[in-house]
Each structure stands twice: as C-alpha cells, then as structure tokens.
Image (spheres, rainbow, N blue to C red):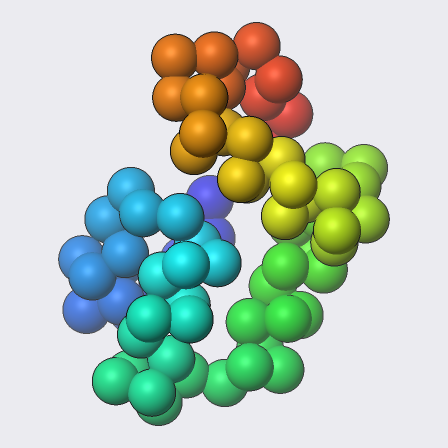
Amino acid sequence: ITPMRADLNASKNASHIFEWFDANREYFNLSKSRFDTLIVYLAEINGMTTKEYRMYVDWCFDNPNHSTERSKS
C-alpha cells in the first residue's frame, strides 16, 4: 500500500498503475520521476527489477482470477 492524495486514489481505484499513470499524468500534473521512484521501490520490496514488476502487474491484470497465486506484496 502506498499513500496517495485522495483525488488520485479515487481516480486510480483498482486500475492498472502504469496505464493509469500514462492516462492521468498531464491531468493531475504528475511527476514522472516520482512515479519512477515509486516503481523502483515497489519492485525492490517485491524482489524484482522494474521490468519484472511491470510484467507482474500486466500478468495480474491479464489473469484476474489467478493473481493471488503469484502475489508477493
């Protein structure tokens, strides 16, 4: 869990973090460097590279009924 501003959290809801960021970056004036730092952190705490983390997130959204089988954090 990563704390977010209430408006960002409501906008993101349960959407794919990478797709949400790309779609909302300009609207919310989000920092790419802060997002990248967050992704590095999330990847590291899950023992992954950022590329592996992106693949994991993609896999979870492509396989919603099986995501708990591969869940790490």
